[in-house]
Length: 155
Ligand code: CUA
Image: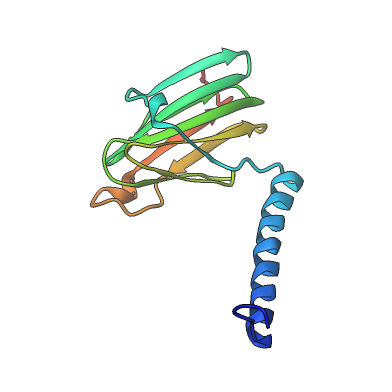
């Protein structure tokens, strides 16, 4: 008799569990390809930055280095032309903050000592609100910023 033989129900539970894990991984990869969703990355801390900044790489590619702190995002206004692709880098100076871009399916956490990154393409003009959706203290509900895409008066 083999060592530690499984009884039938144990074996069934194992099979169901592995099938479910497989289904979750498959769903994630399927959604990533089908909806071209950008799975956020966590970058190594050696690329840490402490100052917020906006860098233009070419006519429609930008890098935005966002610093979250109680209770603001910097930069708080990001002006870009329509059709821009923006790499958002995100970190926090203090507690954990949320980073949600309206109409853009972006949901990240700003964490002290870590950098999260995602890429977003802005194909329609308008004002996209960024809100902190992780309770971070007394000023939480006022913690917001804006991405302004081809807004009249934008530079
Ligand atoms: Cu920052 Cu809520």
